Image 1: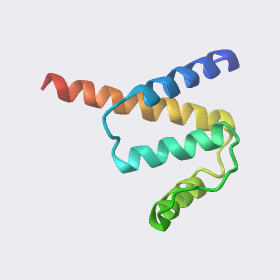
Image 2: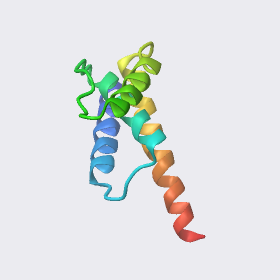
Image 3: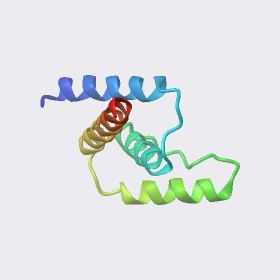
Length: 93
């Protein structure tokens, strides 16, 4: 996938995630959070008022620290795609 295609697919996945109104499972949400922060090179610390949430976010960021920005984009796209595909399949059951 060319850089332009990857960037476009990432932007589309971010839009789809942000437009989703139902709550995400915590594990999916943490993966998306870490991949997004890595992909966008956002180095801000987690800013929740709840220390436990900050701990989970920090752990997710730690797990994604050794991947490249493009790998983070691909992982974000894949995680979002898999999640939406799974919920679509569950609707048809």
